[in-house]
Image (cartoon, rainbow, N blue to C red; front, top):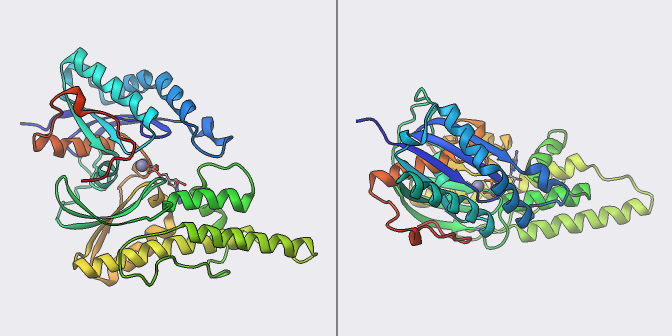
Length: 351
Ligand code: KG4
Ligand code: ZN
């Protein structure tokens, strides 16, 4: 029997995403990015996100079905992100999934956005490539705009959070840093920092590596942000007194280096502590090439293997990852028993 076909929806933040998947294979992965809607505000504005999701979702569903060459009749299950994310944005996807489930009599599967990011590492295209084997257990490092966590991924749909940020997420720190360095409303900041950093010296300023010495696997970015603020303030005073202007490239490269190092210090600690050499890294920040390069080198020194999402379109938020996670939930019979099982949970934890 062939694998079920799943229509998946993710409206957790600023992308209206709809995918059609079959097992680990992506048949279509459509999204409407709201970046232009939020850019001028320097961050996501919840009301605008909700409205944009409502305006676009039907069109994105239609395109995803068309590209996958499937009709509603071909769909076996409907999957939707229930959290974590922006409550009113999540609500749009959840309501749409419920409407479709009722109209076409399809079972619903509620998926955690972060478990989606984990499963993005195992995605395949419609031809079944790449055919990465799934060999448990893994240490998963999840780095997004809202989350930074280390997860022990023991088996399908079985997670244990072994470390997390005590304050800001890594992506959030990069977003804020871009605004501070450029003194402008930029969003998202991660790619801006990466671009600036390409022409900078990562060792120009030694920003702190927060919690470097602590034995636990937690992260912290608020102190690093304060260090950047203080550095920029002192530079501004220097400039006013006629000294040379600071170099944005060096500052961005040095800040990015501190963020990446602090992620990898804890990743290495997790690999050693749990004696697990195989690593997954996912979430929007995995788009950063320096992070991927340094992580590859690190994991190799421990004779392990690191897996990233195989396609760029899977780095940021997308619904294909939700469809793939839903496939493994369906295999375990984890369907919603009623609509009450699919309520938005802005702060949902991975369990
Ligand atoms: O997973 P994601 O798309 O959305 C959330 O679930 O939060 O992650 C978004 C985060 C943002 O903070 C963004 O600045 C960061 O991913 N990001 C990057 C890069 N591209 C996106 N960070 C560093 N380098 C990049 N190239
Ligand atoms: Zn995400």
